[in-house]
Image 1: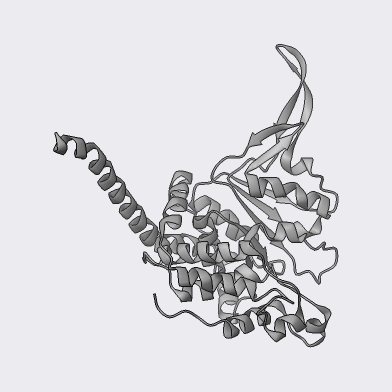
Image 2: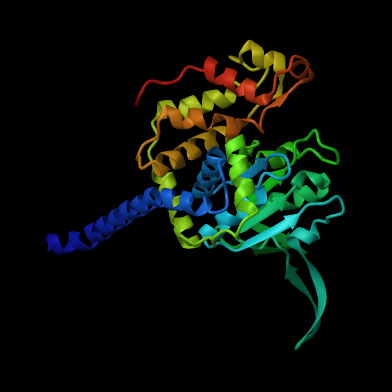
Length: 346
């Protein structure tokens, strides 16, 4: 009787463990396939690609910063094709209205007579490319806030759920360019990473020109599905992380806050606003995804250190003194990594 009683409980557990192991192997092996598919249309930018993939596996949104013409749009669209996700692109312009993103109610003839019907906007997709998000005023930028945080849209008091998985990948031009509006801090904090795409090396740029002026590139082949991505979300959260590494992530975020106990002198001198608790959460979650993508089942200090820049750079606001001295956010993050002691190997 005992044996029969234990069988139903142990078999599902073993089955689940086996499924988890298979999913981890698929994810680790799929990395090379993803890079091969992206290589059909994208040259270089390996660091940016990895950061976007990590956000995807962790269930976070991405802000992508770079000058025009660096294939930001093509990169996001290609990733959506690889994961077989419904993709929508919204071009943000100064005259874009919130309803152009979320949708609106219209009066429509139905079998029951005239009534107001909600028409879905482009936000009702798996992956939204908010192209040049900082070219539209804050009122329209804020239309994405509820969608990013709650995965829903509220219209006329009625909540409309968004499809899962749901991601916002927003591109922005460098803030120094004409006609740009800084994103509100509350919205910036919703983005897991701020991925910076820089100009290519000369060799890579030559390869781009040769490839894009010859025959059309091969089509992107889907590798995973939306269900796979949701499964990866669960796996990432199951990756163990030692408490001393969690404390390391918390201290990195806390040390960026000026006029707080333990804040380094350079933070007090250069920073107007530091990172909140969400930064530490994303450091830990991103580190888990990075470990899993590399076939490891535990987080290392290197994982956290590597992701410090994309997690912190849009959450730290430098002051006029820093700008006058030629210090930018990335320089502050580098100093933080030098000043916060790294935990020993767990």
